[in-house]
Image 1 (spheres, rainbow, N blue to C red):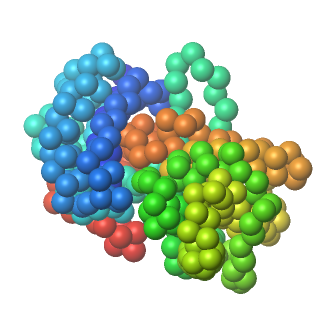
Image 2: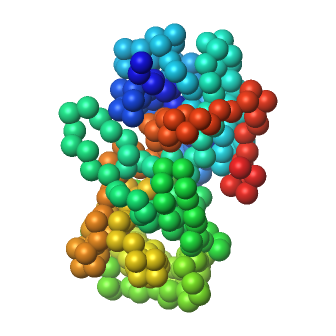
Length: 340
């Protein structure tokens, strides 16, 4: 009998549901929220209200696309955290209710674990290319920048992480303060492709070990632009492509310097990336070139699996389900990784 898992993701501003059968993806539906663009960032209250409106139609559409009836489901996997508490509460409550009504198991998933396993999402008719264990995952998103050693689908060790801003926050905050738009990552990536990454350089932090820091780079850029605009008000408009190219290159240099160090220290050459920032074209190109130079086996998730999506929650839930993990109905969502 096939194991059919419904995955539900609602950690931030995307409502998503996916269905997998024996590890193969049947459907993955995402409803994005455009309302936050007017505010230059995600507004938690608006996000949770939108999830309430989206959760039923998104799940219904995912089941219909998969050709699966609710009665066919084996288990329900859901994001418990970390994330926005109100948003998580919507997904958690819906998952509990559906689990109870269908009398099938509930399986909680760590949102970050989903990103780490994004390269294991399989689709019928597509070649399977997955990292071997152990591997290193460069997990980069709006709220997290980590190097994770992955020994099995359910065994992880964070060996490096940011001590302040995440790299995604650096993109978003600088883009917002420079008036370039939100979300900042795609905007800066697009402008950087048109600029000279060597024209403007920014200082890199010297943090011991494998940990990251991005707040100083962000501050350096903003102060530099402020000082130059005091002399020439048109400086930003005339130089934004080169500024974005230099800023993005600095962030990528910081990420790759620590990843290279981690690979040398651990002897691991199976390398993956995950999280929203893994969609960045500069980072994807750089990690491939570094991999060729250093004889890594590199694995990049498809663009559609870099953002928050339920396919990654479903595949993580699938591994948890196979291990025998089950979640009680009194479980509560958690906003912080430390509380998971």
